[in-house]
Image (cartoon, rainbow, N blue to C red; front, side, top):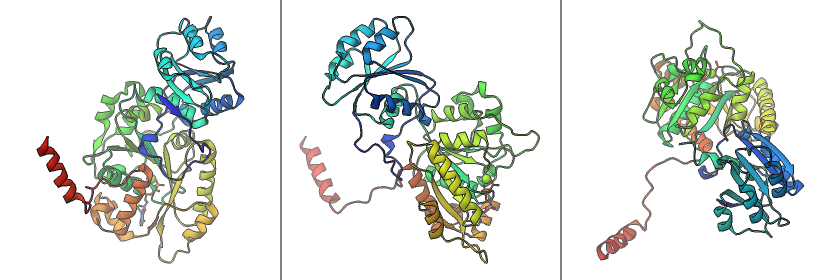
Amino acid sequence: MISHARQNPQEQPDIAPPADDYIAPAPRVSVQAFCETAETGAAVRSAGEDRRLGKAHLSVQMGGVAAAIEAYRTVPTPNVIILETEGRSDILAGLDQLATVCDAGTRVVVIGSDNDVAPYRELVRRGVSDYVVGPVDTLDVVRSICGLFSASEAITVGRIIAIVGAKGGVGSSTVAHNVAWAIARDVALDSVVIDLDLAFGTAGLDYNQDPLQGIANAVFSPDRLDTAVMERLLAKCTDHLSLLSAPASLERVYDFGDDAFDSIFDTLRMTTPCIVLDVPHQWSGWTKRALVGADDILIVAEPDLANLRNTKNMLNILKASRPNDRPPLYCLNQVGMPKRPEITAREFAKTIESQPIAAIPFDSRMFGAAANNGQMIAEINAKHRTTEMFLQIAQRLTGRGETKKPRASFLSPIIKKLRAKTAGGS
Ligand SMILES: Nc1ncnc2c1ncn2[C@@H]1O[C@H](COP(=O)(O)OP(=O)(O)OP(=O)(O)O)[C@@H](O)[C@H]1O
Ligand SMILES: [Mg+2]
């Protein structure tokens, strides 16, 4: 694949990237880069820090293709070799020589420069997997490496959306469940909700599902996990929505290592386009890892001082840990609770330095009914403003609009006639 580096690399837009610019994380692979310029070396090194290459082992050295040939005379080649060519070396001759020491299965990425565009056909003939025209930035390198694996090995590469509260009890699970419902029903993406609050999670209640031990079975026997096992652990809520529910039993305690959920997420990603994590309000190794590793994050906050402080702190640390991602989004919930002094959305946004993507009104009657009946807000009142808000959040998080039948344009009768004519004429 040939690709050009983007023009404005530093800016991470605040809107969801289009679905085709989605970068799936790379598996546990080794990547060695041989650069010719310090700039490319720096871009590759910083790509190695990106969350999507968190599992990969990446090393960078200088010297281009000549250094690579020299290095692999004695040691086996890694899964991926990145070669930069600035035109100082003959890349085609270099690749021929490299081929004599390259193990089968090693993929080669070439980073070229504008004034040295090697003939693409010749590169392909030599088995080059990707060719990027520089100058490259961090994300170009991440995209190229991840692209080598997402296209061939994974069946689907699901996006992970993590939803977490800025404080306990703010309604983050309620928002997670309603947003996931909208993603599945209105955006029509097959989705799974994972209830990560093993002791007290309410997803099973909210979706009115019989108790199932989904997440507990998965996390306590990670070696058994594959897509078939995972499928059996899911409770089906609607056509497009399934749930990996929490046991909500206190027989055991739930202390997890940082990477306890990695294999669950990886397995689900292979079959499910959208995974919504209901992350409990905790700051532990595994909750932080789930947030940092997610494709998108939504923080749910109530409009008070402690929520404001926590939201700011969470945004700061998450932004710093994800320098190549769009910043986490946040929404306000339970806004306008009678008699409660509140910080206005405007003040909140001013301090946080970004706007909430929604301000969901407090409505104890409607939310209480939904919680007690095991229903979604959309089922209680499909036309309510809050239902519309959950849909908007769903669209914002997935970067997709509602999948409604397109409205007929005023030209459609004419187009129909033309089509009928051509069909008849041929
Ligand atoms: N906008 C709202 N108006 C009124 N009640 C709400 C609203 N949003 C959520 N609630 C209610 O607040 C309660 C707490 O919600 P939820 O369990 O989703 O919070 P949480 O942030 O996930 O809590 P925890 O910290 O326990 O995980 C529930 O009873 C829910 O129905
Ligand atoms: Mg919760």
